[in-house]
Amino acid sequence: MAEAAAPRKRVKGVPEKLHVWPYLVRLEFLCAILTIVALTVWSIVIDAPLEEAANPTKTPNPSKAPWYFLGLQDVLVYFDPWFAGVVAPSLIIVGLMLIPYLDVNPKGNGYYTYHERKAAIWIYCFGFLVLWIALIIMGVFLRGPGWNLFMPWQYWDPHKVVALVNVDLPYAFGVRTYNGAMLFGGAVVLGYFGVGTVIYFFMERKALKNVGFLRMFLKIELFLVMMAIVIKIILRLGFNIKYVWVTPWFNI
Image 1 (tube, rainbow, N blue to C red):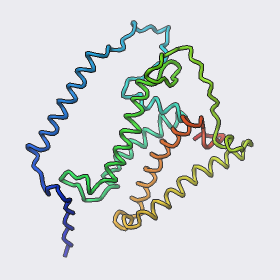
Image 2 (cartoon, rainbow, N blue to C red; image 1 turned 90 degrees about the vertical axis):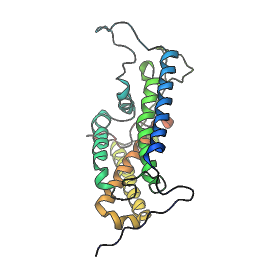
Image 3 (cartoon, rainbow, N blue to C red; image 1 turned 30 degrees about the vertical axis):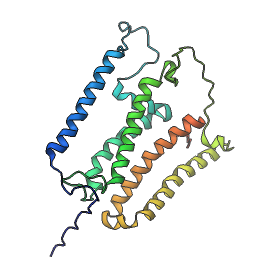
Image 4 (cartoon, rainbow, N blue to C red; image 1 turned 60 degrees about the horizontal axis):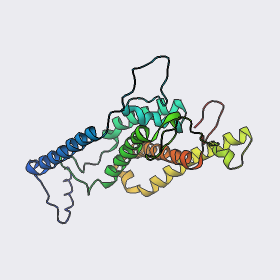
């Protein structure tokens, strides 16, 4: 005999059910109005950044992709092209495709809920807003000539000289030999994923019984990759760290 599904936990002050009309439709309508007003005011106040006709003999500085690809173009600053242009987009697409198979929690199916899915909602919002929208905003408004960072109040000087010395992480820790740097960087990267996986498994022991080892392992690794991208961006912007793991075949 199948077990009965556990009743959903009631949240104090929140009705168990809300009708789509008028509650959800009214909220979506108000959001649509605010978005239209904001876009209308923006289009009136700010002129479109139109330039002269395209000249194949003169490359603009900076040469920017369409706005929806600027997040990916900005990632190229922090990673090798093979990772930023191939591995990262593939992980994003494959990770989104795997969500229905990895997230087998029945809570939230068929109804809207925040209190029962806080972790999932916050992780998604972090990945979407920080790792995509924020990078697009940075590429559109803060990247000027030479793809240098300019604050909104700074003039985009095409002759700006940026005295930055980008070093690899092993070099910053005093490891100067080639083999030593390769071993040091490999230990850092593998240690990050190894320790992170063990800690996550230890913290989510109860969830492991419900979703299984393989699902939990894939969820952990995708989460660690997402956080590793943020860590690498911080290392590059804050400490001018170029690569963490340097080998004859690839750089990470």
